[in-house]
Image (spheres, one colour):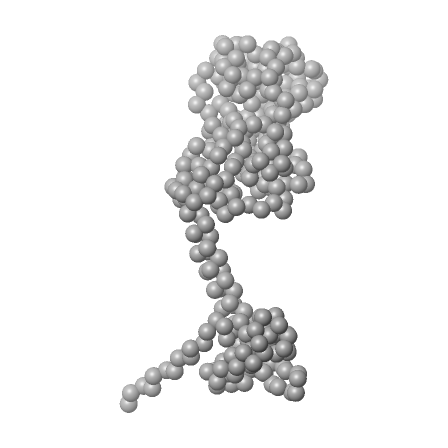
Length: 302
């Protein structure tokens, strides 16, 4: 004997939308107002859904209605179906929006030089239609730009952040003392800052976290640093270190690929920096900026 073909029900999303709204309002008139349709249209769609399912979904008691047991079973399933459709629609829309667009990112020089080239190349492969503009600056300057809405995202030292930004952690590293290979200290693996009162330091410009770190570390060691150069950016500071003009506290990343400078561990203080990705709290991020944010956060352990 042939198996009987299973009956299929041409239930439409409109049926489920109307059903959920009526179940929420428990009133056909209020459901019609919420959906901006006439009440007869609501009643007709509910009857059509009940006919297709072969069960009553609502008990009608005059102007009052209540879910039947069948309606109670259907309701959570209807919520899930409508939510899944909405998620799928949003993902498809996002794919269309990510076909082209732009975002802006700020970072300190060490990160833009040694971390972002690889990361942004990977991002470009994933989203070839998206453009990223990159700006180098210190933490204070980058935070000002984010708060002013001139940068979508920034990578900054994240130990002390204003409440107007949101943060996601990216990486953590130690600060080391950079010395030239001809410097007597270059034969050592580590140093105590307390022993460096006679050394000349290279300070970074105002607005760079490195300046604050250097001054605070020297003061904790009991001295004001002697300044050989005040205001040099990272590349020039490292060139002066290599030439023997002075020493500098720098993050480990800064010495990547440097063969004429040695980085010495600081043994009497725990000097490290935590870098985080920040964006303005409550500020609209374009789909391109959100894609870049999510990508960088996902790649933080890579």
